[in-house]
Image (cartoon, rainbow, N blue to C red; front, side, top):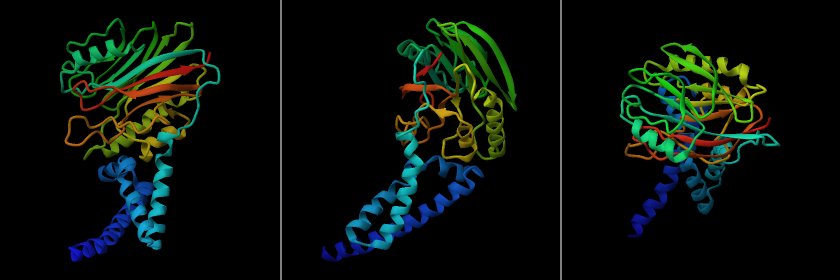
Length: 319
């Protein structure tokens, strides 16, 4: 028994060193090439959970008084804490004086599944003012009850490229921009107070094998298209399945332009993949907010049978 304990005692530091070296390599790759291929993209997307073993090694090194290991673990733990801090702390960019609010529901229906009826029940339960749906196909929208909302704009297609925007408020204008094999809408609705609200629906291709370059190109196009609205006098919301996380350079450049993520400061909210052997670990769905817009609250929805969870947010804005 004592021999086994000694073996374990000798093995633990070795395992920790191996883990720390691997995580250090992953950290460098994340900073230098987080959007270059699907494997590096996945490593970057897993940032909130991937580096958790470094925290355990940090504790082991402190208890065992292995100071070199302690220093190495402290470095990785510190970097990890810096990366995930916005998820829990966030930045307050909302208005100092709240003049109005809108409840927004954004969810990927999964174009290959019959999720329409469940999505209708979710809409009835959450009472949103605006609904942004990705992967709106004849299959996924069958049986969808809008629960009193009107279809503001839609492009329902077979497969995964379709979308739909529902609104409780009157529609003023609709513009559809081409994004390679899909379209991307900009919808303006009239708020009850007489002002306007601008809504963008986003869903670039997934960065899977053979589509990484297209994914980067589409995210770059999204960034370019929404840029004029970043400091709009009207409140602007950009919602959908971005197929990206804040830890990927291709997505983070959008945040660098001044957009804020409604989920920042509200904790880690992974939305994909639902229904697998492990719980969702990737936060691919986002509600981005323009200048002077903030999130009073945001939460994930329950599952509607899609491989994504939705986001429901109460967004506030000034006059």
